[in-house]
Image 1 (cartoon, helix red, strand yellow):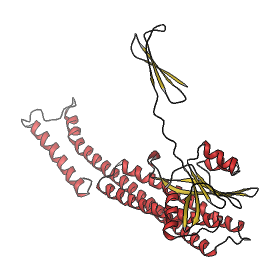
Image 2 (cartoon, rainbow, N blue to C red):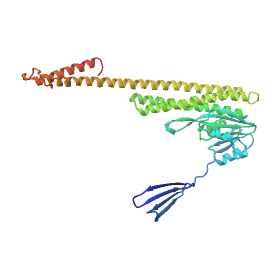
Image 3 (cartoon, one colour):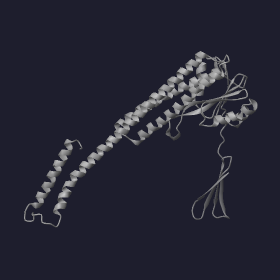
Image 4 (cartoon, one colour):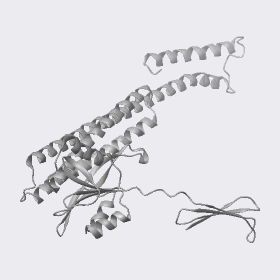
Length: 358
């Protein structure tokens, strides 16, 4: 329960109370003893959205109404019911779920009894802090007859992967097959988002060619940060390939052809990230040099203008001194001084134009 008080005026106070059920109570008081009104607002409850699906591999993944052995349990946005189902009915170790919940968890494997936890980093769109794309962890928990994937974010990758297996009629034979295909799908989505980043960089370059604005430079910096996230995540997923190969090398789960395809796709994604990162770094360095040159050009113009305007001021200061200047009897002394100042300023201006300071 949360309390806050807002001072309406000198005679009334409004007290706001928010309960754990997210109901809001407004209490309007004239003083500590007089209650003017009390209003209760209860928001409409949202229906719970089930984010747990049971998928069985036939000609692609087919959704089932209940769990069966050797089926894939996909959980997104797990709630308390999902947590109880995984830990009590499927006996999934709680420590695995806690590791997956860590947003900064790196790709790795962990075993506990006959359970195997494989954590990958997958890309997703994001509007947090203006960064277009980020990477989030997804955990794949397996044992002899249970396959569970848990992700605390809603991503396009999972639904696209399921639809892809249905379109192609892909049969996932075992848990390693699912993990490798998930890594392959993540590499495909990395490449897809990298193309969007490349288009964003090209659009930002066009805007910067017209006028260099801080907004466009900050936009490039955020894209650079996204590429750093992609780089570290792809490298982590690539390391996972070697670890999985060592774990399953003595089993009949290992499909060398599929493994080679995954390695090739990850290398392509990694090389593409490096290429785009180098291009973006070079672009930002080039625009930094342009900004520096523009500042130098402005300083040259300001210096030239200051020197040009200094000449009349200097001459006027000479003739303003209380000393004999031998022009008291000259009838056109004022015009002579004005013309002298104008001629010297014009000569200075022409000289600066010739050396291209103006």
